[in-house]
Every structure is written in structure tokens, then in C-alpha cells.
Length: 125
Image (cartoon, rainbow, N blue to C red; front, side, top):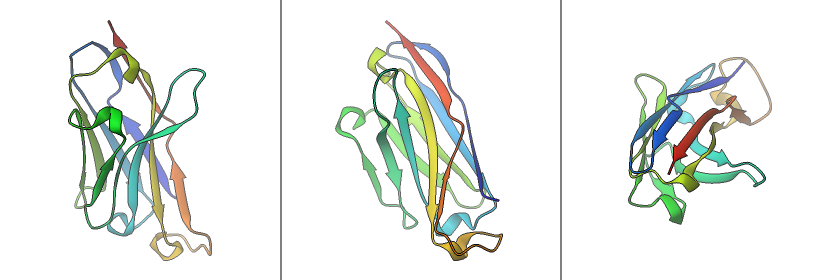
């Protein structure tokens, strides 16, 4: 079974910083494309930042210059450093891992697409 678990959320004032972590297990991490997504109340889940197996990153426009995604392949962990937080960044943040089936440690014929349970980030004004 593939599992991804987020941590690091919390309550912070506008202008503050938080670092989210996503720990992955049950898969070969280095073969996985990883991403952070968020969902605010009443809104659809949106992509925040992604990082490929080769380290290529992409960000949604609203977080460019403020958020940094990174990964530590030796520890099977992905991070999201969030600086200059705004009230509109308030959301539940989710970690996602996507990988070919052969990246799963348990046998499967299906492509890996694993989601965490989410971590709440609240930014007060």
C-alpha cells in the first residue's frame, strides 16, 4: 500500500511562514512525480506546486515567488516552504504522489496516484 502523510500545517498571521512536509511510503520515491494541492472552503481543489522525478518544478501563479517546493529523495520526503502567507492561502493542503505501477513496492497493475489526508493551513489577517 502506498501512503503519503502531510504535516506542518497550522495557524499563522499574514506575512508569516510555514513549511509543510509530505512523507511517502510503499513506493520507490525517486520514481514518483510529487505535488501539493489545496482546497479552500467552497472551492475546487487546485494545484499549488509540483516537482517531477528530475526536479523540475511548477507553481500556480498566485504562489510564485512566495512558495518553494523541494524533495529529499534519500528521506522520501517532499516539502513546501511557504513564505509571505496571505489570508487567501487558507486551505487544506494535500500531498499527491504519481508514479508508474512498477514504482509500487506492492504488486499492482495500476498507476500509482496516492493522496494524503490533508493538513489545514489558516492565515489570519
